[in-house]
Length: 211
Image (cartoon, rainbow, N blue to C red; front, top):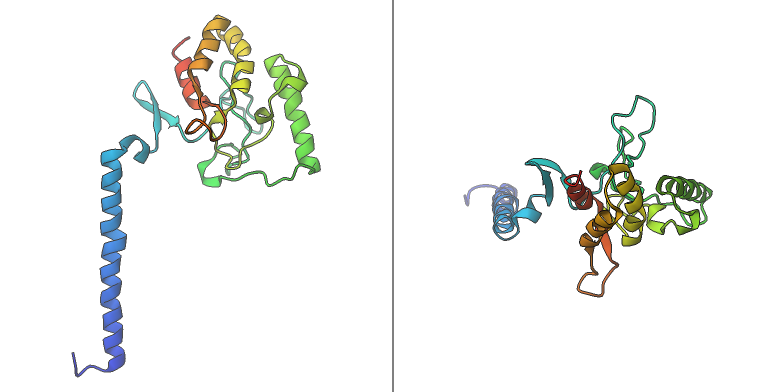
């Protein structure tokens, strides 16, 4: 190698380093991390999937719409009264559906934005009529999207507000549906961080088994 030009030796050295670090950081490290994750936290590593009758129906980490399906072409989908509804989502995909993991985003509209003010007023009227409550009693999370647009959680207040509607449509007792909501209330992280919340995906999964 000593008879090779200095510039060529440098290029060959750089190439060797590139190959070594490609193997270390691009192959060995991902394999080690993946192996550790599969060993210690297999459920989280595989996407925290939710299954019903063995079929994958979603993820505990990503919200989804519970609409009347199928919606005719060109007509916006309508929320299905049989299910607990999530909060709005700004993560709209190419086909117009919300909660698209490839388009995680907030609305980026400020509190004084006229479009946001109008949409909140429209949502308030719709949710109040849909759930049979007074407009002033509609919780804030029923009117605004989360920062990611993918949050599967709603407040316990919003879940309890929907209990009467779900019980009536499904022919279930209100006490039974309220008890279901109470079982799915998650506490604050470490007892003091964040707010209490209800995962709508998991709540509806258990609801599907009640009838």
